[in-house]
Image (cartoon, rainbow, N blue to C red):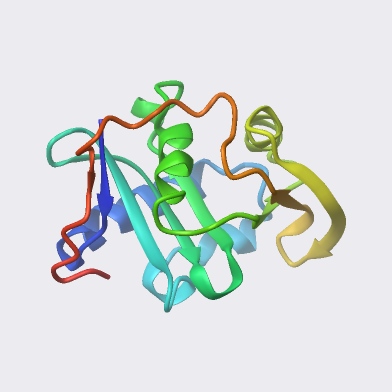
Length: 162
């Protein structure tokens, strides 16, 4: 598995992963699943991309460094259960200090269980146009259950980052 900073050439693959994830998100209201323009909903965010094989995106994570906020974490269906989400979170430590925050829609039971396994805690429950959500926080700089990413697997080549 390789994790690297996304570049402009990755945007079509990221858009495809994002659109597919929204189509599969039966836990989201249908109106929220229609807003599938990733570039429009992630302006100014930094993106890490994961590949299980060179050139085959397996997932991505986008974050807002000024708020230590993870906005999107999506894993392709073919890559789920293979450590992609854990590895993306682990790789983020090289780019962003904890504590981190994110929102998880209450009805997204699989994601909520994943985050709790990774050591996240609930800060509050609130409502939005996407449904009720949990605001989660990860305070620890080193999270049990996130495997080490091999040295060199995180490419720092930021030529043409998005």
